[in-house]
Image 1 (cartoon, helix red, strand yellow):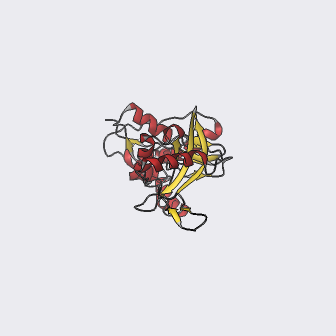
Image 2 (tube, rainbow, N blue to C red; image 1 turned 180 degrees about the vertical axis):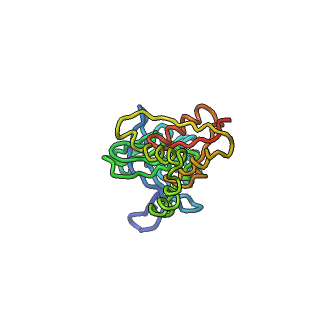
Image 3 (cartoon, rainbow, N blue to C red; image 1 turned 90 degrees about the vertical axis):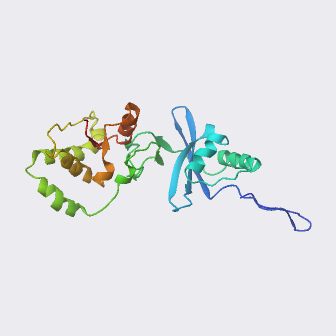
Length: 241
């Protein structure tokens, strides 16, 4: 809001308060390469889900910048005059703490970034994952460690394929810690031989297997983006053909 203007002598309001946008926090700044960003947080109007995004400074105040914010649930005034005021506020006001912005998941600055953007551990500075994955809903928490051990891991014992799936899944986060190269495992077998079940067991360590499952049917760029979103982690791809 723009606060109302009051006549100093009469105390009367000579300019009413003016709405600019829905509640918005300016959390800090960051860079990716040579581009500068403002880190902002707001809540979606439908479900009040909190969303934190790095908005390119070059787009603040222009059509593409407003569209980006509105597409992600921020309500913004349509008045051009007040949009200019809002754009100035976005650039000059709020917190200017430096954030670490990362286009990949995995180990960064002493913490581990999950594909859904959540951060495990304490980073040296506030950290934000700016990429995305089509499997974001698959990274959820359910059950207990003991329950998984008794109902999944115990039953996988003695089955080479299932044990391989568990080993690959557990080793993925260690790659960045030991400085090793990433690797892939290709399961080639007839239909109904347990390939998807092996993948499900591996994925169950990270969340909901069905929601995490991706396929090879996509563009090279799309697969590359998913690889960045699963850096130092498990990327389950089903069915080559």
